[in-house]
Length: 223
Image 1 (cartoon, rainbow, N blue to C red):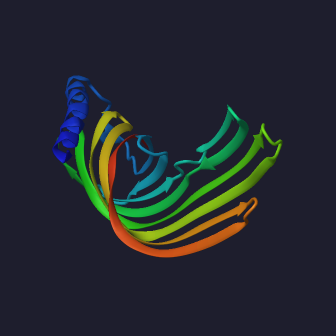
Image 2: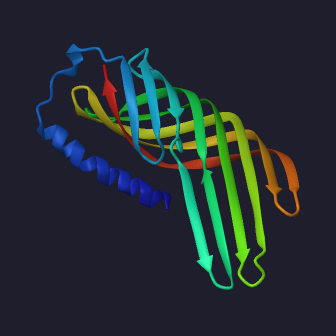
Image 3: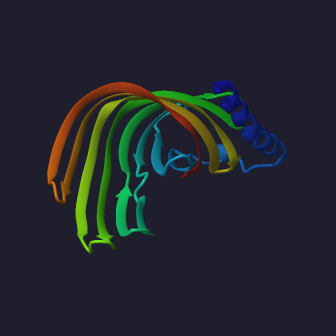
């Protein structure tokens, strides 16, 4: 699977690289582009600011706000010997900040290989609420209730990243990268119901581990 992903990256960059060799680009050496704003366009909603303090070294600060608008509401009704109504509202929100040091290696005139790493922290919040009402046609009885749950996860750790960056215009580049994260976290899970039988529970966990992020592709604007 890793080889397949790298093959897809090469397919993505090859036509751009070929085009850049055939197109007369402005001489970027006449300008000093030390600042870059990056927008990730595939896999997660991320924006980053990168500052080059030497030709080959840079620091990058990243904000991930995936799931910011991720909330779903559903209704369910059914009719048989009883009439059921249920309404659920749920979502998952992730906020992450990272500070990374990046080192660039120029492979071709328009293509750079970069790698590096740094510190990260993230917060994941997954709320869910639901209410139901059941009306029994035979007896006329009504049963109803409400449930609510909250799952909160904090992570602190380090990350390592590697990728390719291709200049497609004087101050615009296309990049693709992979990232590995090693983190330690805390999780709190709360659940409560209000019905014929009230119930409340709370669990707290400690966790650690690593994760491999999928291929991320984005555009960078240098200034």
